Image (cartoon, rainbow over all chains, first blue to last red; front, side, top):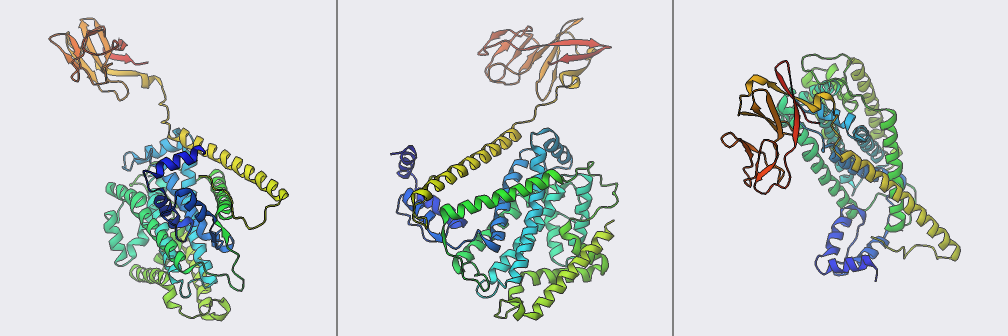
Length: 368
Length: 157
């Protein structure tokens, strides 16, 4: 009898190991029943050899990668929290300590920064692919709803996080971003209530910190869980015009592919963080606005709109777009998934993308 | 946890088994290297960065020498090394660590007895740092005191 068997045997007499294991597997790794009465080794072997649809191949990797980046952000964020102090007097100095003094601190800082951009980009690309492939047709409307909510949450996580270094660039960039949020009717008031006003005062930083490290991540975990729950119920959406790929066992096929994917992904994040490090400027000074500061890139289209239209109108439009984004599966209710068979929505989506790009360009120019 | 790949789709021929175990080893090696790199980065990051020991870090400015009368003492709440500066005679100052060598409580200056006493376990030290009462196992650390232009400096290095 091997040592690991002895250890699990000893533990099994005292703990319901299988139940703990089933908690992890139902969260995402494996779906299907796990017999809680079997010892862990046996239940584990069953769960790991169960054949699953390949969610680590083709366009499905967008979802897997999103969750992996989210976990990655959790780990790097936890490490940053070892040194970071969320007060206007200490935030800049503690960030400087991370970047300059702590071993590999700059690396972790850069990876967290690039990981957040990667998360937003992945969620956006995933929504685009959901649209192109008509994934959200019955019974998978919730895929889109949770995906859109996760996208909005990720953007808020990035915005709240980008204030935390408390240098000139982050401070004024978030100020630009808050101008956008301030135009939103109702939602803007709720958000400004949460952060304690539209101005960046001393209390705002702490509230941003709490939202960034506790509130938004918890909400994201919740929606990830809901997404996994609906995938387990209705299954992955089959690819158009292709036979569903043959199910493969979780171990080794899925896990190996997951590992390879995460290595590629983290290689990409490491490379970006090394080659294009985000700058860290002087300490935030509320009494000197530097020139050429733009809101974060994911807010540029909204910023362009706010610059173009009267604020109230821009706010209403933004709010409608946000609600429309989340509720798209209930607006487009046709049965066809192929893009060709739903020309109206294809054209509308194309126009929407063009408008987004134009507005982003306007926001980019106005920010100078 | 190790789980045997019991139900792989293909029938394991001898050739396949050899290739499979080779890739298995390769995979484990690569993952192990990544794991080592990851743990190295995390541990070296979490290890608190060493304070830079510049001259301004090790030499503490205590204040005007005239502030400390004979028989009185001044406490300096340095974050790393709190200490007492005590005037033993008109031209002699002595600096002693303020952390008890027993369980690191902060010592108090007891002027009537001329001792540093520990409020936690009643340890006591004389002005040379020697243990005169209680449980402390070692004498106190003493530091060099310099008076320049009427200002007292203590060298903590």
